[in-house]
Length: 409
Ligand SMILES: *[C@@H]1O[C@H](CO)[C@@H](O)[C@H](O)[C@H]1NC(C)=O
Ligand SMILES: *[C@@H]1O[C@H](CO)[C@@H](O)[C@H](O)[C@H]1NC(C)=O
Ligand SMILES: *[C@@H]1O[C@H](CO)[C@@H](O)[C@H](O)[C@H]1NC(C)=O
Ligand SMILES: *[C@@H]1O[C@H](CO)[C@@H](O)[C@H](O)[C@H]1NC(C)=O
Ligand SMILES: *[C@@H]1O[C@H](CO)[C@@H](O)[C@H](O)[C@H]1NC(C)=O
Ligand SMILES: *[C@@H]1O[C@H](CO)[C@@H](O)[C@H](O)[C@H]1NC(C)=O
Ligand SMILES: *[C@@H]1O[C@H](CO)[C@@H](O)[C@H](O)[C@H]1NC(C)=O
Image (cartoon, rainbow, N blue to C red; front, top):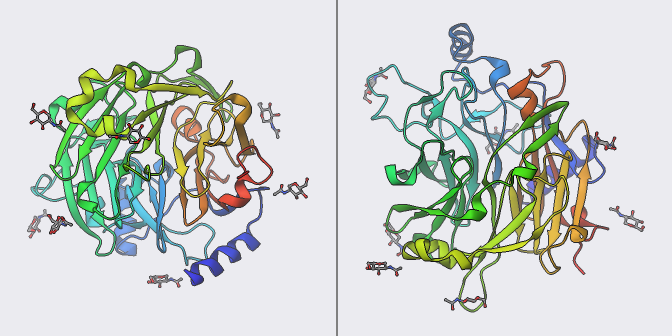
């Protein structure tokens, strides 16, 4: 940890661009640690690696690994689940496939395609307090092209100490609807009893939530009106692109466990919405409650105009909820000790160039990490590979909220 601290300070000294969050890494385009130069050459030739089609999207941190996902929006993604060593002194490091190169191969055309455990396409990952990496594999490749569902949506959980697969759970037919899309995964873990874990997977396309019960290796679907998008807030202006999205429940964050009975508040919001809602995790964890729990879900409040958010994260130490601000090129926060009103939301950082589409954020070891990637430009136009397109920022939570309404009173 001491070593990491020194490394962070080095980065802070070197790449200071933003007032509050410091740019740690940036890329014009992504490159990977291939098994060999020859494999890289042949992947380029066969178009298994099309450089400009590789867009980073999700991030998380465990010890000296910074995980970066690269979903298969288009063909030619070299590897979907990757990491960077935090000791890497390059400002644009290569991505190393996790847990291996083989795991990240599509292998649709060999006889081992179904028997071999591979990862098709990942949007977000989540490290838990039991040293496990939760991975939501959509199973869907080349989304914007031929869109082939190679496998059903599948949860993969890796042991970070051994880099081995602990669990694989494919969603059941009853979990999935025609336009289901699973881009996020949030584990609910009691560190003292890792075997009784749950995970929540929002279905942004069909306005539901999948609950995964680790102990019973079971999953089920929960639905509620509050998982839907708000038709007044589906319009976006990002990076010079105007578009409309109907994405429902998306960001989901867990409060600290209640000291007496261990329950947690689950904060959630649809992407195309400016409202935040809450429900107790006891409701989600009870498979029998799903059909009779309408009144257990509550409106927490509105963040105000133009505050659509993708990912969110609740930091138990500061008791602050952080969230991305996609229409404002920035990061927002709210201190959970205050009423949830627009006045009590702070825009802690905003930059019309470097913060175009903040896509994921996490708090780890007291530091807020953010990935920005100009995704709407990638989807609706084309990125200029001579410009910096992808960035990862970091700041201590303390610095991030200083002098804002989120600051600890
Ligand atoms: C970073 O750490 C990893 C794992 O400890 C090691 O394999 C690698 O060589 C290190 N890289 C640098 C640049 O020090
Ligand atoms: C299929 O798996 C077997 C056993 O793991 C291996 O020997 C063989 O090379 C694989 N075939 C392909 C085409 O990857
Ligand atoms: C957790 O589950 C593992 C594997 O099923 C088992 O070996 C272990 O004893 C369990 N631990 C507890 C605390 O129940
Ligand atoms: C646990 O505590 C919370 C907060 O006090 C309360 O709302 C909830 O009803 C409690 N749950 C149970 C099962 O007692
Ligand atoms: C759910 O209902 C089933 C069947 O009625 C029952 O066996 C089970 O104990 C219930 N589970 C919970 C968590 O209440
Ligand atoms: C960023 O863009 C928005 C919308 O175009 C504008 O209102 C705002 O003033 C800009 N901010 C800066 C710092 O240029
Ligand atoms: C906070 O405000 C104080 C007083 O206005 C100022 O001196 C300080 O630089 C500010 N800190 C940050 C991190 O903005």
